[in-house]
Image (cartoon, rainbow, N blue to C red):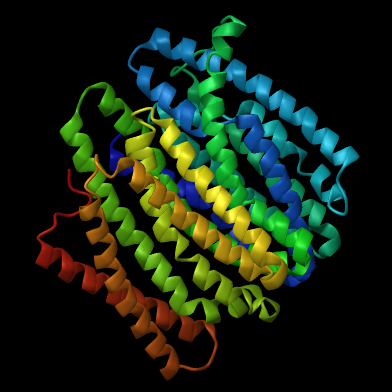
Length: 471
């Protein structure tokens, strides 16, 4: 399947993974309030940590391992079998640990956490890494989209008050499990399980664990924030942070989609020695990603103050400022993602990825401890900004002699200028349309998109750039 089609399907898959919870979020904020949203966010975040431990670094390692052997059916079957046996061991241990947490250590979130158990169970049969390594994104996208649409419908039907938070948890937890199970049928004829010695499975544990260090580090500044805000500043502050972060997380799905498509593709090209083609792909990806994330970041900054109260309710007005600042992390995430998925991981230099995200985690943890006690959710936002900035900076220090960073930074500067002009135009239109309603917000957003699009076309013409989607 072509890169364009894979990207389209994977964008649909990644965005739907977070888009439907985002669609249900305004309903949840009005039904359950800040405290309810904060309590659910806390329980879900704890559950995600156990799922990360269950999967180790398989979402990156598994994709790369499968992509390297996909042209040899015998090696493919053996590699899949060995890695899945390892996955069963780690996911099984994580599931037992999850039950220990729920029954021995959980507090107010215990009842919600119990109904999130299917999240940990789903890790036993998560095969996204296999299909993506085989460049088969369509089955993942279509099956998960259907399951999550059904889950969203259940939320609106069955969740009626804060007392129904456990239903919300069960619905999304069960949707994750069913989505994973639905992908099993897509593997028929493409890969086959054949028992292999345990020691062959365990040989994947070391390199997978190395990538898990980076996964854990990323989780510290993308998930631990919610835990720290809840413990230090309370569930209400975490509710505000959760609302703001949910929008940014949805938008970052576009970035992850492109990176996930390019990782197996570039890995396969590297195996074939296509160095010049890889360099061309990296430059195009960087240009596309920075163009996209700059539009998102400056666009969110322009309308967040109106979007938050309209979308989440008046009680969540303070989320607007949090959202506006968090939006700029998208630029840093996008930049770092291209380097990670198209340079670092395909060349098996996992230590560069680990160092960069560990530095980011250290910066975030330090900032959170200093700022959250005094600033609440805003302290977590600042800590996240500093952490996301640290990751590409460390990557630059380690790779500055190998990559044309000057060219990449010109992409950033050009689209930042275009984004800044768009922001000023949208804010100006907002002053002419002071009433806070969906019509005026829609006018601002459409106008901003038009300004950004026209300025990009002018820039591409002046810079004599080709179009992204041409081969």
